[in-house]
Image 1 (cartoon, rainbow, N blue to C red):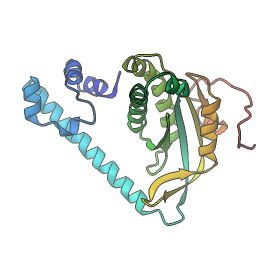
Image 2: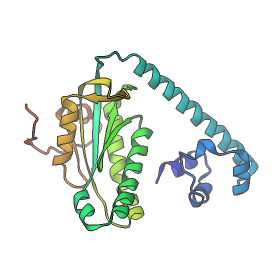
Image 3: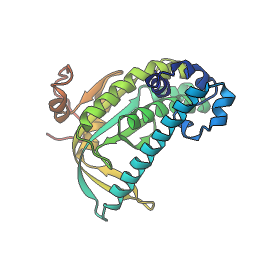
Image 4: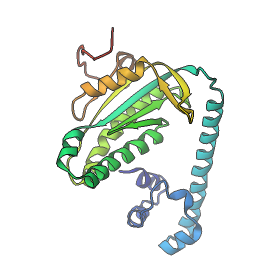
Length: 249
């Protein structure tokens, strides 16, 4: 189930899920809905009041999150700062083969469905989409906004991305799978480039990327630190030692 139907269900208004989907309304469109839009859609008066009130709550939450992000970024000096974070890479399996088999427009559409789904899930779990690397999403949990349970948030995001792949496959018109790697540790958070874009660098980033490369289709590989952090909350399976290119120890 995508994010908007879940949100409507929490409000007890799941009967509008299909109506909203038919009219192209998703979480991005919600903050722009006015009462007249809901009237035009045929939403009942009482339900309009509920929807508008909760849409306003979403806007306030987004504004507060943005303010926190700006404050965190303002605290970064020229050399950055060390942060304890969790890094997640989610990569589309078989993208190179797809690129050679399909035309550019089809590949772009498939990639868009995957990246959109992964981005929404990361953000919904309190993470930040650091960048897109071709067919891969790099996400950070713990910077610029830190939570006490960032490893757990990253794990739930990874599981939800895998659960979303059948839906992504249906949109794309073909079976798609993802492989995911997650690592936690110290990184350097800073603004880089001419636009001072916020990003993180460090060994944990490289480790998460290499774990993703080693993960099978539909698999989530965790670093040792992640395994220790989550072993009491999930049933985890040992994969054994891996030879990861560029990773020592």
